[in-house]
Image (cartoon, rainbow, N blue to C red):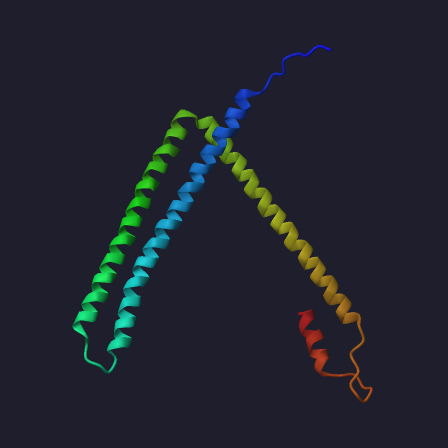
Length: 173
């Protein structure tokens, strides 16, 4: 029994891992952008929430200056935390963009390969979704046809009921 050394495609494994890293960087770009937008929206919503609560609490009463001051201080602290998060996420986004640019400059063929692979995955997902939608439409049409072929339900007097007939007509549309 002879055992020949098995050659492993080391370069292919490295390329695939590098492609995954590249795709992760592109995915991080989207996630960071979404996180920044989310924090900005929350920060903006906090302003309106403060104003609404204050307006509701002051309705018909004299303002409690100390309470208003505390609320304003709490809002400022919260606003500062949101701004710190936005700044941190923006800094991370900037670093991620530098990484993407580095990949594009150093290994453009691997970037191209990774993006083409992701595009193919995306196209397959779109195709599969379209095919599933077409199958669902066919099944729906088949069920509607079967439903329309059934005789109308009878009422207590043995005559065809008119109330369920409208639902059958609506399903034909």
